[in-house]
Image (cartoon, rainbow, N blue to C red; front, top):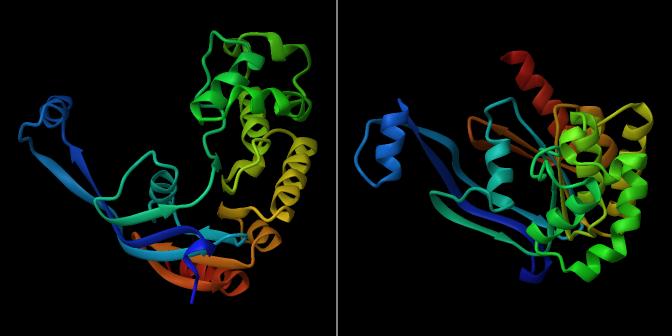
Length: 246
């Protein structure tokens, strides 16, 4: 039996239903609390799972299987329609790496901006500022406004920030494909370093080889439900068979 203090992430009978409005007018009526025609879309259907502290888990599934919805609920961006989600510890999510920056602030200023948004104290950000700048390797651009950055440069800075804030739970969604080959290798090495410190790791990917390299457990989603939960090799085989059948 899993002890409560051993749990990093737990979903209990979680269902998520989205209301898809057919027009902007209908969306506005819904926002104002008025009745409006809308299609109900069930993204997650009665999912229960537990991830223990220090586990490395791969999440497989086709587009639309519910992976992103689960990540959004774990990170607090979205909330379940029914059921309960429990998350213990600081979460660092390497999802949309180029998002969440203030375009008028410099890269250096955005390190503090992003840190504050994530609830990190200024003193702690100061301690890791040098590590972030070194990892991002943006040269003099670090003191230029973010609006002058390419999408790749923003992604590099985003990865550097999230990978260096010393999380308890690290969530990666296809973010290991950032930048050129040298930087991708650097990202993989950083993830390995973080995992060796005992951090809980949740990896969402379509690459079974990358999943096998980082994870021991695999969970397969289909149509918003968990259809397999076991060893990563078995999960990868199940996912590949599922894709072939589809």
